[in-house]
Image (cartoon, rainbow, N blue to C red; front, side, top):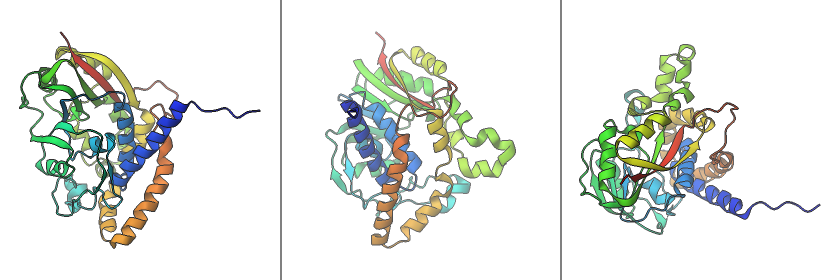
Length: 324
């Protein structure tokens, strides 16, 4: 009996996912749970061509958009080699990446096919890192909770994967509408409120406060505008935005795997890795990425879910258009 042949489009997509996962692992190898989440984000975002002029809101260090756009970085580079504040990560909830270091030197193997017109973020250190990629035409430091420093109808495409971090969410959405051209699009990837149910926070009585403090490091406090799907869509309508497409892409299973990951021991892993000689570090990192690439490849499936109930997705992508 002849062997059945897989759909060529599916084969291409799987290959693309594996390649993209490897690029994200190269950069985030000591936090592999972030690598597979970003692969899911990138795969979903690929459904939406970002025509210029384009704005990347809350772009951070730019690495997600750089890799999503087809950029590649040498194995010698990752975000951990220049991390700082490691002793304050667990108890003081410091951000190990919100520092600028002379060690931060991304070695670009391949530039993305196209640059992004403007990247915007609150943190100056992250913008300095984004600048090192030579990927954005312009970088703007700005608090997304405030009126944006752009004129009406400035952008054809806007992307943001951090809207749930924004406290002044109504103003934020109104501003996105204001600066988007008629016929332009806004792509938001947002976490839903059910994310809180997919963490170990639900077992506080059994695990204790200290356990959850180590695991969570205050992250739930940084997501002030989590909401269910209906509430997000009411916000969009209030801001004068219509939903053209809604694509769930992170399931309960993804969220529960991501919930712990290597987060609790990441500062220690970074110290250990950065204490190695360069050749040893590179060799270990390569083997690490090879193994994790195999382990995490099945996770880069938007529909992967081990639960039989019809639980809400953990993250969803919205394509929005300004209403006329």
